[in-house]
Amino acid sequence: MKKTVLIVFVLVTSLLLASCTAKETSTPEPAALAKQVSVPGGSYEKLTAGQLNQKLDAKDFALVNVHIPFEGDLPQTDVSIPYDQIDQHLDQLPAGKDANIVLYCRSGRMSTIAAETLVKLGYTNIAELDGGMIAWEQAGYSLKK
View (tube, rainbow, N blue to C red):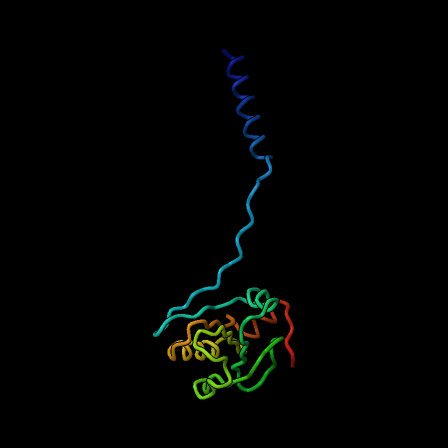
């Protein structure tokens, strides 16, 4: 009886130790999706600095700095338009309300306002850099001064 208990104990202990030392196999996590923000008239996306940096590799969007006063540009910026005047400068944006447009400012506050304005005007492919140039620099990317 004692021998049986001892054998069961050794087997259970061996199995537990083997499971603790087994290598875990996991599939890589999919790239994080941009956060959708619903506002009156539609929605827009909030991009992280890393997501925007990846999108710059195959840039197919207009990159718009809406910060005032000027404090620098992200690489590949196409135009600067003051956030509170974006509705007065639609001619500087790509034609068509379905054009891909990414907005940014210093901290994200002004680009959020500009994104909401464009969505209210019927634009359907708007994104903004969450945290703005501050988040961009904190992620290790540089600005053009």
